[in-house]
Length: 183
Image (tube, rainbow, N blue to C red; front, side):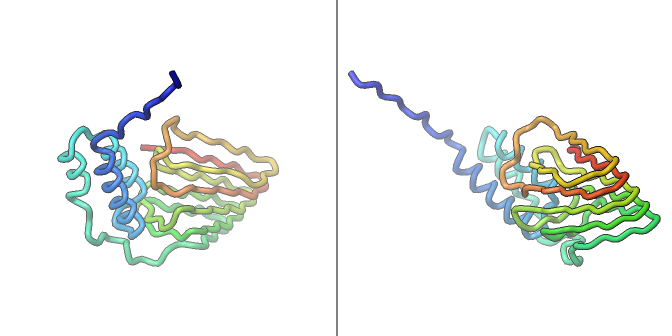
């Protein structure tokens, strides 16, 4: 008798979860959800045990939010000073930061990110860079550092479907790079 393997039946709520995920992806793409809000809601969708719980994750989606229409950031420059971006801020697909004797901190948890990828390039002389992403966001690091360190502190969790890939490239002299996830 031939070996026959049956594939498991899809879970009854998978189609509802996928539809909710799609609506959340549209909302984050339009800037109605931040990256942090998106990852948190996706987690709730995929752990929901009934249709009502899935629907609750979509009930209060904002129509339009503060900061949605602000100009997206693409170039940051600092000389003898620090650059910090936190809270709700719009970001383009490519961001470049140039610093001389200064640090840069980019907190992407409240950022309005459009697209499937975000590339951050940091150029520093005597400056450190820190990038904070929500848990479940995939990050690639690279670049070159002379007399500096690169450190990744990402939470050991699965990638949240629909989140953008964040690429961080640092080119520095006497500068460190830290990429970490936070809830």
